[in-house]
Length: 277
Image (cartoon, rainbow, N blue to C red; front, side, top):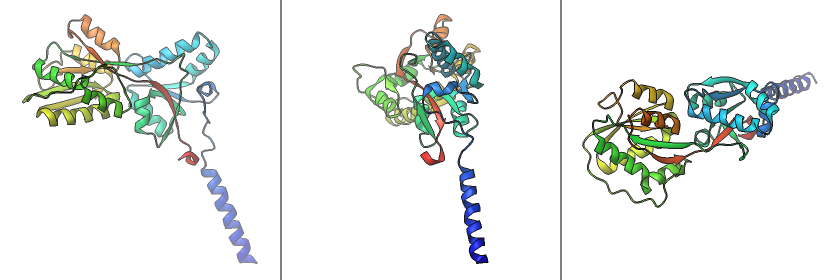
């Protein structure tokens, strides 16, 4: 009888421990409007440096036109504004926050750990990604070849495989030319996975070498403005997650022409609960 009682108590204790492990303190967010609930903690990018942060601010501005109360509640729930979109995603994955504004392509990289909450179409924005050869590039011809590959059928297919929407109509197949030089490419942090794949294919087809530097578009633009153009430490190509930064460089004469090569979409991500995995 005593053994049975001990076993029964053990089972009861185990059951209590299991229930205690369920994420009981997590806020259940199932729709966009739930971002305005009390105690919700939201991460976003810094609008002054990170395009994803600027897009999140635009989304809340659009919401303000039809539901100012909800827009204010969501703004009040933003507890951190990070230096790049990956930092936002990491905080959601680590459950330091309840939700975060990120690109759909970033959400796909952690699809086993986060769940996507769709942003209403009428308030959402469509981020466009421009790419350009920098005027001070040491090898403008090789840099132009890299951009030609990004805009080609092969390059656009790689972008689509990584969740981006291609931005080039009537794409042409890439006809490679031999390249012996090293090209330095500055690219937005949200392009990390796809540009690593694009670079690998470009190097295989041309024999050239690409050096990639990823950071927020704003940080890279400031680096270029500070003189990091051409040579081993500087950039030959700039791929931004925002037209704003490219237009600034164009106005300052550091870019002659640019092309929009991809489009993305903003979403909200929340941590997956244990029962959802």
